Picture 1 (cartoon, helix red, strand yellow):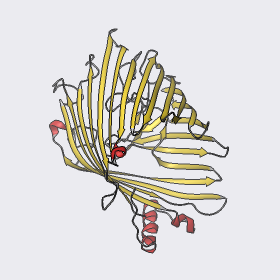
Picture 2 (cartoon, one colour):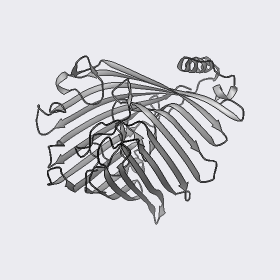
Picture 3 (tube, rainbow, N blue to C red):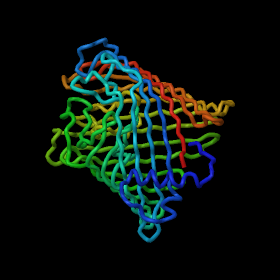
Picture 4 (cartoon, one colour):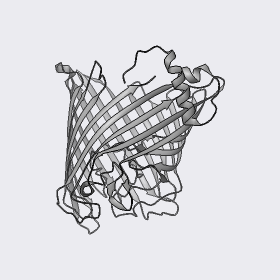
Length: 431
């Protein structure tokens, strides 16, 4: 993120004003609270084009194409902490999405909420905001309010114009060397294309369990152990109360090996229905592995993923499943599915083009147990070309061109897709 080399004093009033406006309460008198505060603004422009190759206009999910363009702004304010044994702080986030181009025939891209009674018409603009109070004692921190969680059991989705927000509490503690304990409880969320808070619900992956079923709350208990400077082991358990429960074990790291570096990412999930089982029977175990080797800007990766059990892997609506084979369009997490991945990354700074990078990957899945008893197959190919301006007025401006092709033989629950996303993003450090 770029930094404005301005004198410190002109921003003092802005810091105080911004935090007061966002909190609506009197702030404690503490130099560190203001001096350590930060503010940044991200502006992103997104062109989204998803072409369903079946050409159907009668599909209940919408027409044969979804194409929209929007401008998004994300303002992030973070205070420092007050002084004392128990320290307090306040964070705030505000988001604004503006429609630049859309038509009723090609709407419903997940970028904008619908307006009025016709779901085909996208709103001209929408906004959402959240405030988070925080408290710190030694190396233990408690946050309550709007959260953007990034955990194995819940990773917030940021795949459109504005990200999802979740609302609840999170406690993190690093009192013991090399250990990190995280306890999270969430009760509401705000979807990426909405301004309103909703009950937390299960994502509708397929028809093997009830779609969009809500639960009382989402809980997660996670322990990270740093094995060395290069390797991390993780364990987590939790889930959506009265819908599903889940356990996770992970091992990830990268270290020098020969002239290059070797990386490994191993993930295991065990999921089942919980309590009242509001979504019906859930039975899934997922093994996801990815190995990589990189040298001189070139990285080649290979992965394998396997689903066991009667149902697809459950995860929350508004989140991304923490799977190595979760790609731009598909997650390859259907019942009994086997999938493999090949990926290539190229960092072109090694040939004198710093800021320019290229990625391509291919995943093929088969062995899917369909509701009619037949076997399903699917594949996806993604490519991405990215450039980040390295210096000058537009330093840190990033431009990404992403393309995806997805094909399947079971169109009763999935559709063939060609997709293009063009993303321009600029991060400005205000203070």
